[in-house]
Structures are given as structure tokens and as C-alpha cells.
Image 1 (tube, rainbow, N blue to C red):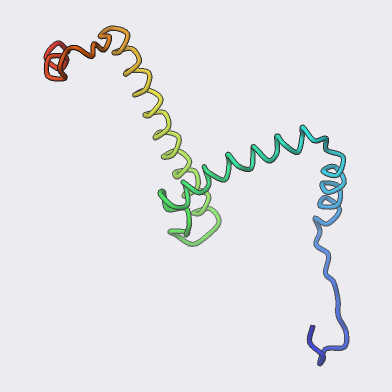
Image 2 (tube, rainbow, N blue to C red):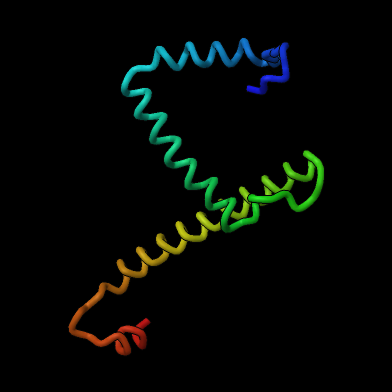
Length: 115
């Protein structure tokens, strides 16, 4: 700390009691709760990283909290639509594999013509 300043103050925000309650609640967690929370953090960090790196959530496009909320909602919608498309594609490919089972003796050109 600087030597020139004599009076020092700690400023407590309005939400400080809620922070203390949350800390006390976290101290009572069991090992299972800690592992679940660690898994949750690991999974959610991946989603947030994807939104930041690939979908423009790293920086606000427009000024204002309302505009930032809109950007976050649109980014979440884009990520969810991408996941939905991947799930539907996997489901479709699974159905195709049930209808046309893969035969290693046939060439890929023959299988393509059958489809």
C-alpha cells in the first residue's frame, strides 16, 4: 500500500451479506457436492468459451446493457441451434445406418449408388 495515504477504508457493497451467506453455505458442502460443482464449472466453461471465441461474445457490439443482453440471447440461440443441427444430423445418420447397413466388401461408390 502507498505510504502517503494515512486513512484506509474497506468499502462493503450492498450485496456483502449475501456473499457471506453463500460462503457459509459452500463451507457445508459434502465431497459429492464439490465434485458436482467442479463438473458443472468444467462443462459450463466450455460453453462460455465457445460463445466467446466463435460467436462474438468476447466484446459488445453495441453500447448499453439492453443491447448486450440482446447480443447474449442471440449468441445463445446460435449455439443452441448449432447443437440442435448436430444432434439431428447424428440422429439422421443413425437412421440411415439402420436402413443401409455398412458392408466392408462393397466399395464406397456402390454404396453411394444404392443410396
